[in-house]
Length: 144
Image (cartoon, rainbow, N blue to C red):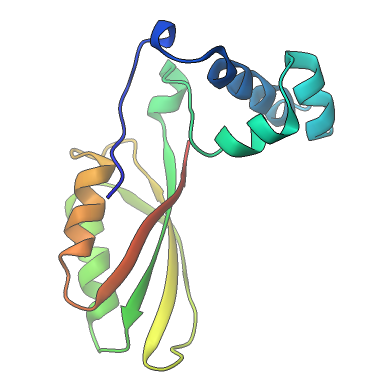
């Protein structure tokens, strides 16, 4: 299971900060293309793609965070309800749920969450979901 840390910028490679800068340029519309953003901040496209979903700035605005998680659920009645109750008990807010039809008695599920009021870490939430019998391949797709 992945773990997440808040680390002082001085300990990290400069590339991480530049990836965050490039993402900011794209998010704010200052540039339209990834190639423009990476050129502006001075990193390669490869570096951007390698780290874009892995490094985030812990600014005040990021405490109003969103996350996207995915997992596979056995096709059993009430299993999704158990997962949703686990999420609700953490005080995370569910924004969207996308569940595909079960194939070979397994359904893929993607849930977007608002983590603003969550009283546990995302790692702890993922572990709690992992502990539900019938929930498999739990992963954090992205967090902002």
